[in-house]
Amino acid sequence: MADLTFNTAAGAVVDRSLLILYLNTGTAAAPVWSAIGKRVEDSSLEYDWGDESKTDIFGNTYTTMKKPVITQTFDPCELDSGDVAQVKIWNMSVKDQDVAAMTNNDLLVVHAYAGTANTAVFAERYSSCMVKPSGLGGSANVGMPIDVTYGGTRTQGTATVADGVVTFTAA
Image 1 (cartoon, helix red, strand yellow):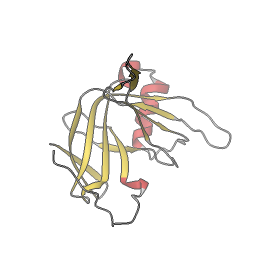
Image 2 (cartoon, helix red, strand yellow):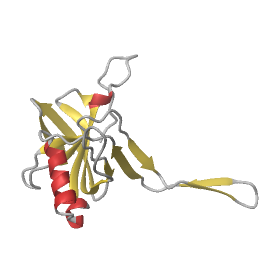
Image 3 (tube, one colour):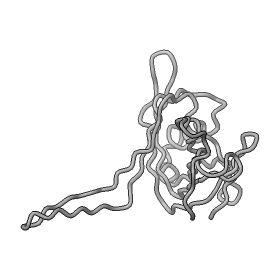
């Protein structure tokens, strides 16, 4: 895939709403992409590259690193019946405690700031991700903080977003 440019105005920072994680709430054959993170104020992908530096007996330093383990936390994440992704996560984890389902989620990261705005933005699909609540409760509202670990096959491509419907096309 060729290098991309940001589709935002020069000198302007990229708005956080242009980086969205979607959970497939449909099927593998007919995915329905539902956003994760409604009511969340702050969330970011964390990259652990497993880097290590060593200095040999001559004083030369060498560094190695691996493909990253990518994690993301959504907290607070207050329960909302209109949040399709959250309802699916609640059912597979709180109601069913289905560990196999929790570790086998299809996720799509849409970088709406890179590529051609809304028509062909950069996206990466991960085929087998862990999505798990880290708690349930709260003082005024019931929250369900969610931890995500990206896994499985990473497929790069583009996404289109039109009228709230996300379509992914592999590169």
